[in-house]
Image 1 (cartoon, helix red, strand yellow):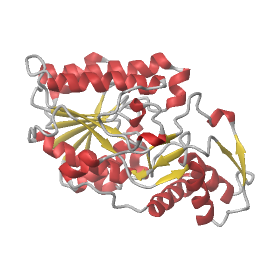
Image 2 (cartoon, one colour; image 1 turned 180 degrees about the horizontal axis):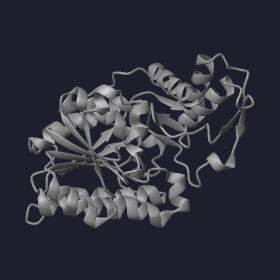
Image 3 (cartoon, helix red, strand yellow; image 1 turned 90 degrees about the horizontal axis):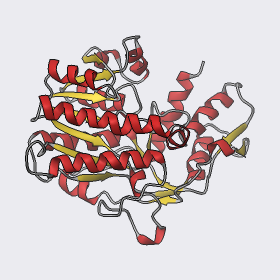
Image 4 (cartoon, helix red, strand yellow; image 1 turned 135 degrees about the vertical axis):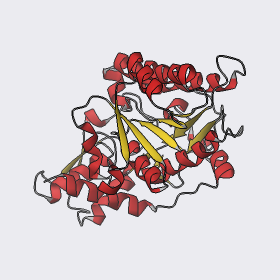
Length: 335
């Protein structure tokens, strides 16, 4: 099968590319600009995989670029991962977030609708669309109300609904082969250092190299999250996509939560990594207002039963291995 990945130079994209190549699939990656940005992913994509990826150049927020891509290339499926995905940044630049996440997604929808109606598409939404759900209300299922509380979540919610509508309206020009994934917290290699957990790992690596005082800037360590490895997350994407390209009605027009198990305070992940590097009790945690969200979600507990029952997906990578891989990633990046 031939798959296009938007956002291939981001966080989940390169991890997904590795998986697809290793599964024997043909991988195309959309890259904004031809200045060599695709080489950034070599930090986790080995050369044997990298050489099997075909890079296409264009900006999915530009309609003409998207039209050209779909006119010139034929795909079985599109993993639409590209987005402005940082909630705090969405408060600083809500317009840019809207353009990337809503207008960009609309361009992908229209490109497939016009030129490749048989092509499947996974829209990477987010657990942020659910907003604040009180811990006592139980694990979040796909039937929970969509009530985003930040511009990022709002932008994803708009496209989430449009993608599902495009699949569920059983009449031309809709009736498209689309589905939605709502991933909960995940981390691992290539997670940006402005995101929690990865920010901690980045600072730990700098402390170990004597590039930073033994002080770590932190946000709200009382928030609770269920965190999975990004490699497990993208495997769920792939399992669903395989069914979508076969036009499985249990996938088309449906949303799927993708989330792990095991709820912890954010402080737990930091302490685990400090212990792994022999820094437990030797580092001061310094609250940084810049790391605290304007509106925080206190707790998120996912229910991924729908995904698990349909595909048999399960987490394979233990949390300790995930945190170790993240620490190793920053150890190698910082010189």
